[in-house]
Image (tube, rainbow, N blue to C red; front, top):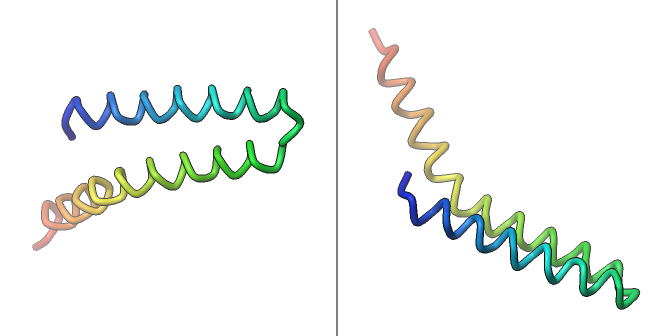
Length: 64
């Protein structure tokens, strides 16, 4: 995992939280929910390969 991935996740979190607050104060709660969901899916799509690599490394570690 590189440090740039951590910065990307932080940037997405900041942007999503700002958009979420703006949309909630505008009375668009449903769109705020969709923005939060989209941010979560973006971050998960970045993290899933690292989790897969972790599990494959662990399974190779315990092979007999």
